[in-house]
Length: 313
Image (cartoon, rainbow, N blue to C red):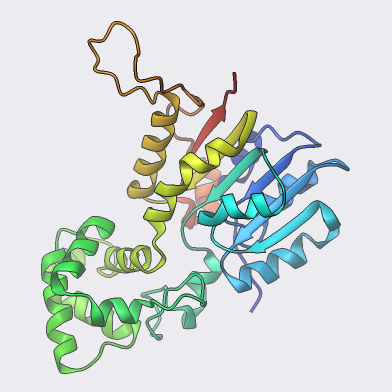
């Protein structure tokens, strides 16, 4: 099966990076290489792109797609959480732009055996990196009712989180929950029929929550923003595309704290904490897809792009 993934906010993201022909750029979520390809097209002889992804299929697909750019491209199979170690190992002290396109790729959703989708019955997996031990099956069958409730409430923002967690625990006492189809039926039973009829798919929020937990997505994002900004050269840009409010909130807060890190009380006449601004938030409001993109790619619907520019004194 060919790795197909339509890059969202493609033009807007590439424009936001202000690409210099001789610059060094990092795509921390390489995927099929859609954004990376457009970056590479704009690079000159001395420009470089470092692509990072934890998904083996994505690495293979991006390698083929970017092959024409030769040694301008370096692809690393890892999580962007390790960007510090990766750039140090390549002796790169600063990058002119860093890009993250968060969330699940179309390929991951459309490959049943990956277990990301509630639309087809498959083994519960949801790992973006199949070298990791923890799977969705482990979470569903091993987490306490309290912890299941917490992740479905916090990461899925589902108002029926308590009842869903209770139904999962009741079901697994009879037999282990092994497939996405089994989990979907359990979730359906936990949500009132009237709500199921009116809203979207009943499993969407719970599947999102389990996937986020399985891949530590929010933790990785939160811990990486400061590091990535620290690596940017003067006028370098960090551009991040998010797909749900939890990610967007982390990015918005992370950018704001780097723009204004002062921790002094508001009534202090001068700053005494000594924390200096790392740059400026370019996007006061996030950039969202236009009507045409939404018509062509329904998965772009919830995407938002935020951009931060580093300013070095």
